[in-house]
Image 1 (cartoon, rainbow, N blue to C red):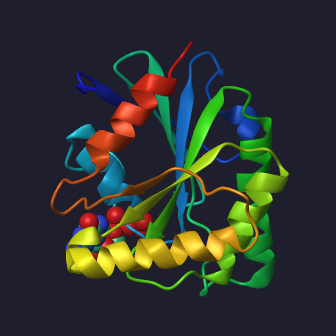
Image 2 (image 1 turned 90 degrees about the horizontal axis):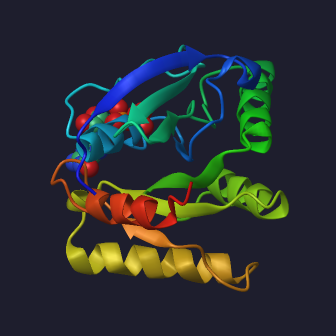
Length: 197
Ligand code: GDP
């Protein structure tokens, strides 16, 4: 998919305040620092559409972008901050889960995972919740350039095995690097082929 236009629409702190759900939507989520803003910017061919490296806990907003005037990209707040209080984390989680469960036009959620890390409990639990809640999701591994290709493949295989302990099948997986502009095109192709509205 060629990105002709990508524009910021709105920041909202509650799902009720988000733009009308009148076009197919694809959302991106992951722990703080996973490389979410960098990946969105790389895919959109834009230097600073999504703001990178914001202070964890500060930006609790759901950001909507309009792409090619016919689909919506959502940048969800990062989850699992170690540095915020428990109650703040709960508030965060509520915002995110309410959004995901109430967003009728959500076609797919991309769960971002740093390819260098062994499977983390918080990510696995979040995906478990997606499964239980019938939320369609895929995994996008980030920062693939930080590993040699063999090591990257090995980590993806480890992840797959971990998921297969509890899942019958694994979700679609994309290996990306915002730095090297890799993999974003595969995500965009996936979006194009599932964008049915
Ligand atoms: P966010 O908090 O998930 O939005 O993460 P950012 O996009 O701000 O990225 C966090 C840090 O990881 C920044 O220092 C980025 O430069 C770095 N980063 C993000 N993506 C990549 C990547 O693909 N490769 C490398 N080497 N670094 C990356």
